[in-house]
Length: 126
Image (cartoon, rainbow, N blue to C red; front, top):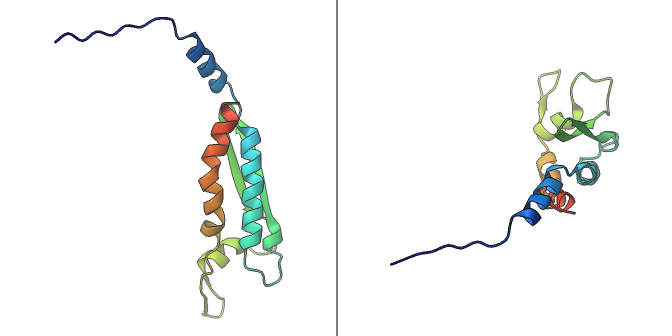
């Protein structure tokens, strides 16, 4: 049995596409992801006073070829504890009691993570 492979043409189109994708910038998509994550966290945060829910901020940073999104909560700056995290994970009190967790961060971010990859891919192949 004889098997043959034949190729015609060149890889110019693929090379052009790879050059374009390798030089693309996903920061626009990351900005959209940052906003969605911030809105989702604010919406899902348990609200006694609303201060923690309104404290969410998102920032996209780029250094060289690495970009990242960070979500922070600046509410309750008078506290040494990260209030957003202790609401999510539970905590001990100063009088020996325990406040049980009210998990909300993972659930708030699940839908953001599910769509993030597609958004970044679409931005890169424009």
